[in-house]
Image (cartoon, rainbow, N blue to C red):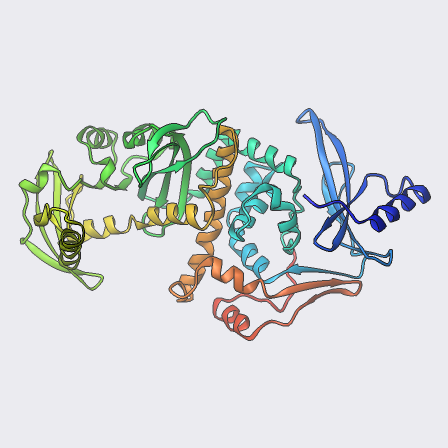
Length: 488
């Protein structure tokens, strides 16, 4: 929220109200820093939602000499659609370089999102873009969005009340979300990585929170996110929110809910390695690759030494056998074994901890319904880093765990925006990987660098600012055009 305007600004607005009361009806002045912004505010009846909606518009900046530097205004037309008027002021400066990146990374999800959420797709995309730009909170959204060039012509409604309503609509639109996920799944996604992740929250209004423990062994309330990604590409496919006390065997019901087809290969971590869960998966026609816990009795029946191979410059020994009626593969990463033993010995010397289970250091036991070469099973399990990357990025880069909202439906909408943001993030990272730059830059690095390129809107038309040499070189390598004006 802005601060109260200075007395001279109040006097200016009062004079305008006396001179032209209809012309400045709904105008207010807010002060941010040393700048006074003129805003228009009103309400409009929404016949479909059966309630009034807030309408707000940025008029421009009030200068101390009494002149107004007007911004490009966004207005609502009589039929409820939005239009963009011409520039009526001196200049309007927007971030342009990062807007170009977001535009091209959004093009794949824009059509299905517009079809599934025709009334709120613009606001959902704007929130997802702002999440990538490091602005996750609703009360900062309007000011943050105003800084970015709206190349796609979304013209979203960015008031706090509207965005809160958008999250509520998106979170409660289960059928629309399912349709959107189904449209994203078009193509061959037979191999999928599946996992469950915990999100801790202190919200009082959520009914899906349950007590759990964090990594520091401290009790807190939590809910769970269940996600599915394409195994080979890491492309996100689905995301849903479940209660905080739901365990890994909830995957059985979620697969039915998601409509995952038979013969899909599910690659999962240790938490899913129970016989009942795997038997049920197999009965339903699914194949699986799942790791077993280090205390599994399977380690007592299978030894390594049967064969070996090199995987990503690391020596791997393996052994093959049977366990619970499925194919069991035991692997020993010799490099990882050395590291684990060193850590155990170091802990014994520094903290007096007893050294245990050295015989299983560096070992991984994997159970599968498929009889494949041990190298192929190992590769599939290692590829499940796609789902770990999803949760790590969603929590750390996209603020997916900043659940300050207070109802289940709002948090579901917030999680859906997180999913959209990750889809855009994945497209940017895929482009970085194609250009061979994914080890040097993250999507956030790229957006931060390209934000240096501005577009200046003047009475004579838009002008692109000077492009720094390093940004121009990076844009050329990735195939971005920053020297032309992109339009929707």
